Image (spheres, helix red, strand yellow):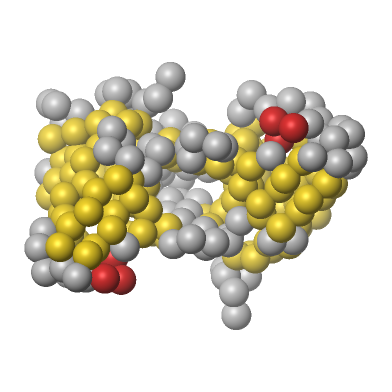
Length: 115
Length: 115
């Protein structure tokens, strides 16, 4: 009965490959997010979708393309992987209440290693 | 440009004593502050929050204090228990995003509770 799940948990791949990370939430939330935790341990938001609509799009290379088939899923596809993409990627979800007080619930993270 | 700063990367406290984790922010538009706790190989989990209209919020052993004039908040854990050993992230958000809450995270403080 995991609330926010991500697959895979670990991903090791070669530079230049294309890979996807999947995220699903069963909390009935209408907003989902992708965060990147870099080597300095900062959690930085990348994207946010509300009811399948892109709401937040931080300065992220075009090689990153989120896709939300429905409001319970937000997948992250990465093209032409680079060494600097190595990080832990966290998915999160929240129920939007039109304020800034929405608590976000995080998945367990996907550790991506690009060789 | 680190809008949320946690200047202590680590903290060691004896079991039973008080743990105090500090956080500073630079953006005066932030109106909601959160603390997340993270265990290894897991995603961050929400711990406690405070609105900018308050200066204190208490939940069991956890109390968050907000000093708006100093742009400083702190998390007090008393008494500290072994299960409190984790990384604690301070985070802040501002109203203005109509359908998603953009949370800015600090870099985290690793709290170790020693017997």
